Structures are given as C-alpha cells and as structure tokens.
Length: 331
Ligand SMILES: Nc1ncnc2c1ncn2[C@@H]1O[C@H](COP(=O)(O)OP(=O)(O)OP(=O)(O)O)[C@@H](O)[C@H]1O
Ligand SMILES: [Mg+2]
Image (cartoon, rainbow, N blue to C red; front, top):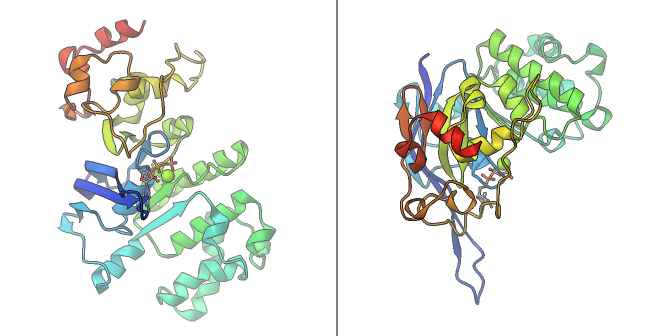
C-alpha cells in the first residue's frame, strides 16, 4: 500500500490560563508524532480523553498548522495554507466529527446542503447537481423523500449521513472521522460504521477513525494507533493489537473490551488519575499508572521501538521482548 500522508515529528502546543496573576501553562497536546497513513486503509486512533487525538486529526488535515514537524501528501510537502494547491488538496480531505447538527445549517434543506459544495466548487454542471445529490443521498442511505427536510427534522444518525454525503460531494480521498458515531444510539452507530466501511471499499477512501469505542475500532480499522499524553505508545495491525497488546496501557484498554465467546478477559483496571497534559510525568508518562513501572521508567522516556510491523514504547518490553513474559506478569 502506498503512503498517502506522512507526518514526521509533529508537535502541537497550546498556551492557556494566562491571567494578570498567573503564568501561562504550556500544554503539549501532540508530541513528536511520526505516522504514516497508507492509501485505502482505515487507521484507528485511540486513547483517553485529552491524549491529543482530535488535535492530531486536525493537524493531519492541515486545518491546524503544526507547532513543529512536517506533513507530506503523496510524498510532496503539504502546500502552504491559502494557496490554490492547498485549496484543491483541502477538497480531497474532509473532516466528519461527533456533532452533525453543528456541522449543518439549520435553515437549509438537506438536499441544498449536500449540493452546496458541488455548486461552490463547480464540481458538476449546474443542471446535474440535482441528480448528483440524489445519487449521494442514495449512497449514504437517505431516502429521496427526505431531500426537502431540515436538519432538525431528522434523527441523529440521518444527520450524520447528511454530513457524510456532503463530505462525499467533494469526491474526497481522505476522511478524518473524529468520534463520528459516539453521539448516536448503538443500533444507529452500527449502521453509520457499516456505511463508512462500505465507502472505504466502494470509493477506495482512506480514513483516520478517532474513537473511544474500542469495539468499533476493532471491527472497522485495519491498523490501530494508541496515544497517551500526546505520544504514540503502540501501533500495529488491529487484529494483532487486540489479540496481543504489548504496551501495558494498551493491555488495560483492550482488557475492557469483551470479545465474542470469552466475555471480558482478565480486566486490568487503570490506576490513578487520567493524564493531564499540563503536568507530564517524568520518564515514561504512563509510569504513575503502570503496575510494571520501576525506577527506570520514572527516569527514562521509552522510545517507540519497531518490531517487524509493530511499534511499542515501553522499557519493560525492551527488557523482555517475549510477550509471554509480559503476559505472565499480568496473570
Ligand atoms: N485550542 C486549544 N487550546 C488550548 N488547549 C487545547 C486546545 N485544543 C486542545 N487542547 C488541549 O490539548 C489536549 C489534547 O486535546 P484533544 O482535544 O486533542 O484530545 P482528545 O484526545 O481528542 O480528547 P477527547 O477524547 O476528549 O476528544 C487537551 O489537554 C486539551 O485541553
Ligand atoms: Mg477529541
């Protein structure tokens, strides 16, 4: 699979909380991320709240310029924002996020909203817009009689379909879906997830799928990237990550997902406070919550080490690369 998008050393930081009496706090939301997104894949990004998933997603789309680091698209540097090449590329990359109502205009019918990008960008002749809108509505499973409805007259799942149809109108190559189904009922979630999967197969779309829901990630994604406090701690093919997580953090996340036939595996509860990017622990940022941590983990930040097609950042793995040994410690 060829590489569509490549991030090298991506960093993002925000300065917050500056008042007359208080020094500003610098939050490193994304910290030295190297990541490849390959053509035609769905890459899942998981991690607790505040781990930098949405920030990374926005940066991959070029919506937010990196504080440091570089992005290439099909091997060439991302064009500078505002240039014609950048505008053309932006059409190929679309964002779908959690709240479809916020993404839609309440005063426009859904057919007009799906047709709007076609009109603005002159993507099809004016007289062909209506047909293309019907086609897009069919593709996302909206009925023709719903064309004249307004967003508030639709269910959450139907609204998300409208957002997806509007994104598809631009004939994108790459979608970042940031918690696209977390506001939906479980049954509707499955329909929207199936729709995204069909789009990958039928349209050859490449996607980054950001989610808290590991069950959905396991079913949908080809590859999984696990983030902790702005960094990647583990990455690999989804089936392998779920069958044999290596990083203790991933092991804890995965242990909370029931799997068919065996229910919950021995559940590993995460101890301590959820991560706070404003006060990053020394050494391995996960060490205060890790049952394997020792003095070395407090002192030394682990590098992300590659082992064939998998990556993990844990000093304990370096000491004991045999996974069975790590598993024994858990038993
Ligand atoms: N515009 C901003 N200004 C200041 N801080 C920000 C901004 N955007 C994000 N952050 C901070 O950066 C960190 C990462 O945020 P981000 O939204 O990327 O996390 P996330 O993994 O998407 O979390 P969630 O799962 O809750 O959506 C958080 O600590 C957040 O408070
Ligand atoms: Mg987020």
